[in-house]
Amino acid sequence: NAGVTQTPKFRILKIGQSMTLQCTQDMNHNYMYWYRQDPGMGLKLIYYSVGAGITDKGEVPNGYNVSRSTTEDFPLRLELAAPSQTSVYFCASSSGGLAGAGKEQFFGPGTRLTVL
Amino acid sequence: AQSVTQLGSHVSVSEGALVLLRCNYSSSVPPYLFWYVQYPNQGLQLLLKYTSAATLVKGINGFEAEFKKSETSFHLTKPSAHMSDAAEYFCAVSGASYDKVIFGPGTSLSVIP
Image (cartoon, chains in turn blue, green):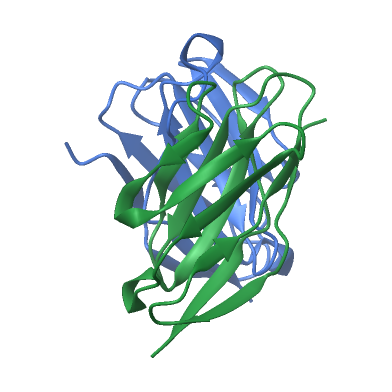
C-alpha cells in the first residue's frame, strides 16, 4: 500500500493564479481531510469528506474548494491564490466517524506552497 | 466545543532525561485522544491513542500517556530521551460528532546531547 500520496511536493504560485493539490489514498477509507499547517498554529482543518459525493467545511475553508467523486481521490482547489495561502498542506484519511471513532488518521507527506 | 492546549511550544531536554509534554483538552462528549509526531519535512504519524480502555496508554518508541479525566489532561512521557525523539508533537481530541479531530498547536522537542 502506498497509503496517502500528495502531489506536487512543492509549488510556487503568483498572486491570482489557481492550482489543484492532488490527494489519493489506497486504503479504502471513507473519511478524507485537508489541513493547512502554519508555524506555531498546529493543523487547521480546511475541508473534509465523509464519503464520495459528500464534503463539508472545516475551520478555514475560505479561498478553497474541494470535490470527492471517488473514494480514493480528494483534490483541493485554490482559485485565486493569495499570500495568506502560503502554507504546508496535508491530506489525511481515516476509517473514522461515529462507527470508527478513535481511528487513526493517515497523513500524506505534504505540499509546500508559496504564493508570491 | 472541543479544544486542545499544549503547554510550551518548545521543550528542550538532555539526552537520557525524562520527556514530559503537556496536553489539556476540553470536550462535550467522552473524548478520544491522540498524540501524533511529525519529523522534519514529513507528515504526521500516530504515536498513541486513548479510546476509553486503559487510562495508561503505551505507544511506539517508548512513549506513553495517561488519561486523567479529573484534570482533563493527556500528558505524554518517555523515561529517557533519545536524539531521534527530536520532532514536533501534536495532541488531538475527537470532535463532538467524532467525524473529525481537533489538533493542538504542537510542541517542538529538542534533545541536547
